[in-house]
Length: 278
Ligand code: PAF
Image 1 (cartoon, rainbow, N blue to C red):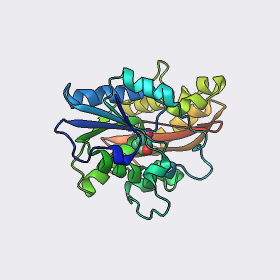
Image 2: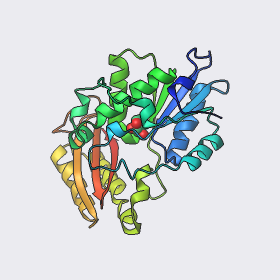
Image 3: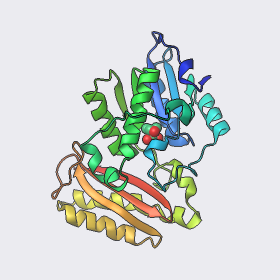
Image 4: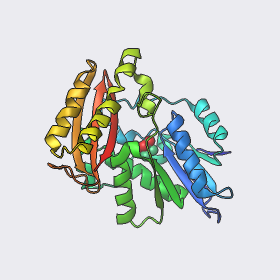
C-alpha cells in the first residue's frame, strides 16, 4: 500500500486504472470496511482503491469535537492494509488549507435543513474538502455511506452542479448487532449511553411499522419516534424530521420516498440515523 501525505506526492498524470476513492476522517471501523469492499467491487481487481483520511477542521462547528476526534494513525494504516487498499492519502491540515484561503464550495439548498440547520457551516466544510480531494486524487468514482444520507445527497448535487466526472456510489448503513449504526463517534459513549443508544433504531423501525400500518401524518410519525426515544432517559433529541428524500424538504404527509432522519445526543455525543419510508 502506497501512503502519501502531501498533495505534491500525488502523480499529476493519473494512470489508466479505474480509481475509486473512499473519503474518510479515519478512526476506521466495520462500516468503513464495507465502503472499501464496495470500492474494490467497483474498481475491479486491476483498479485502484484509495482511502483518504483527513479530520477536516472546516466541517466542525466551533466548540464541537474537532480536538478530541479520534486519530488512531497506526490502527487506521493497518486497517487499510488489511482491507486491501492500494493508496492511503493522509494529508495534514496545513497541507490542505493554506492560511489565507478564501475559496469555498457552498451547496445552498439541501444544506439548509436537518444537519445543516443544526450545524451551520458543516456542509460548506464537507463540500470544500470533498471537492479538493476530487481535484487532487481525480477518482473515477467515490463511495459514501447512507448513514450520512444528507451528505450523500449534497455531494451528488455538488458533482452534478460542478460537472465532476465522478460516479457517486451509495452504501447502505452498516449496523452493529443490536441495530446501532456504526460510527466513529460511538466510541465516545459510556456503557449506559451505548446501551440506551439502541433506542434510535427501535424508534425508526417503529415509524416504519406504523407507516406500513397506514399512518401518513408526519406529525404523528414524528411524535411516535419522539415518544420512543423519550423512553431512554439519557437521550436528548436535537431533531426528528420527515422530509422528501430527493429534495430534503419537510413533509406534512408521508409519500413514496420519504426520509425520516434524526439526531440525538447521549451526553456530549451526537448520533444521527435515518430510514427511508414509503
Ligand atoms: O463522512 C465523512 O467522514 C466526512 O464528512 C468526509 C466525507 C470524509 C468529508 O470530510
